[in-house]
Length: 182
Image (cartoon, rainbow, N blue to C red):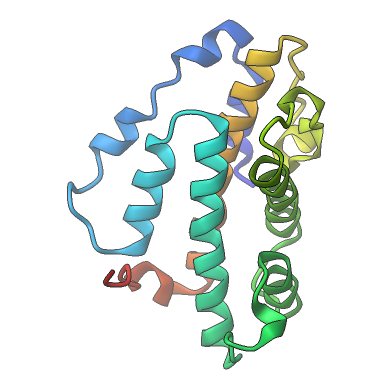
């Protein structure tokens, strides 16, 4: 994980978390890009709220896991690769993921399942210390519920983009992958 970014984020006072503006990053991206990397970054960064951030990032990661499995010669139509966790386990077994990347995606999958299957899920009950950057870089966990949720959203956005970028650096063909025609 990007030590510089997370160490800097870990030092930001909680009240200043609300001032982080991801639109600055979005404005640097092309308006209509068909490459997966730019589309992922734009779509994840523009989401507001933890629910949309987690679900959008999760959908992209599911698609990327399927691409990695196809690239490895796996038949992703087989029943064993229908769930995110099954794809994640196989991609990890094939060596495409670093330990922290796998850990982040696994924890985000658990959070996504809670958010998607329990309309009344209370985010304040989720232990954000399970996310690798919070575990490793000395983040103080806010007691204030809105700040806790905002911290998860910000760290998740950074992790979604970073995990993709790290995987793509090891698999450069992903940078050129176009988004599918709908």
